[in-house]
Image 1 (cartoon, rainbow over the protein chains, first blue to last red):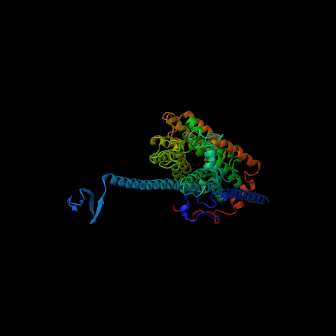
Image 2: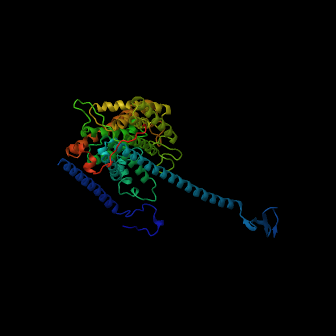
Image 3: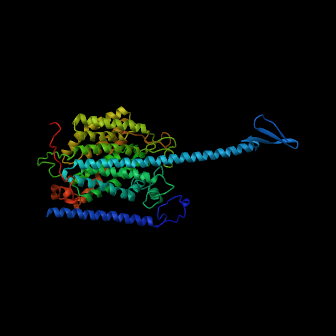
Length: 55
Length: 503
């Protein structure tokens, strides 16, 4: 991603990587997906643990 | 030809018929003195330059102070979570101590990204209700929220031109995490982790945020129409979280062994009461950061005023007011609870209840009155918790009572004692501000109760139907630490001292 800045004097507003592009949305959606995956995997681990306890 | 005109440093130079140049002897050099008007213009320009430089420095200092002020509220509020962590782990039995900790840590972890994704947006979009229209201050509504709070706009990341968005978002995120922690203690020892995290996300990144938009925003309809005043969030944070927890507890059910077949309750003792009590004290430490973050500093683009601090409603406040009334609230709550229970758990819960009872009017109470209200909160704490327990609700740490009941008590107390104050100030025409009234505070209390209880009950019911709410009875009896963490908090056990000190 990098930046279009060639020196810091150009940084007068947003200075994060990928500013003013499409990547903000892309990284946001990927991070949402990671949260959902973590919850899903956590739930599976938890329910498996309860099943194991029943046996 | 040069004539000696002054005995000191000024000389006239004669050229032709008259004196037309003035010379100044300065540092042993002769300089030309310019006509008066020209000199004044130069001095004025230099002065303007100096004033501009000075203003820039003052503005920079003010901005840095404001940014640092809110930044420091964030670690202070993280102390609240250290406290809730200790509180819950200590309040759990030995077999569940770590599982309670895992649950609490995860609530915090999921609150941060979800509040970034949509919680912050909800706060700015919803103040006028569910229509997402723009309010009278023009600081709310769909378009405004989209411009400043969607997770992909310029203000939601490193931005050299924006020293405010990140620290405000951070402080609000910690408010959100506090609501999740309030619920967390009530449901220990039998709730599934993932089910709990889903509940925490809905409470922290949606339910309380809607309450805040309605009652803690200058465009909020509860403020503009009913004059609701809840400076320290007794209703919109504490009561919402407390009654959300009640809704969950009704579907979750009590811990195995809590109630006998005749309905009488058994006391399930914490495995580490000192840890729990210390945790409560940490929560109180953290609340100084929470309440500090409720103040709007002057002199910035986001400020109500250039010359004085204000509440979130634009009404005046000082940190001295907070100091008087928070300390009086803590003391009153402890003394009230001590008078009734003599129990250190309830005494420290009383301290928290004392702060919550006066939180709505920390900006306005006369300190001895705040003390008396807090004493009353400390006194009613245990009876209210017992009343709830007698109805089959197993609230392991008294969260519904401390935060829910006392939160509403505090909100209504401000209506009793503070009626007549203007509920808004900045940018409102003189005499046009809605007034604080008992009626308005009761309306606010009812709304906050519903905004907490209804989503808590509905969502927990859905999770229960899906099998994601309660752990299996086998796991509950065996203990959640070894079932799913899997680890023991004290692998070498806890043994009594072989040589008690009194022997």
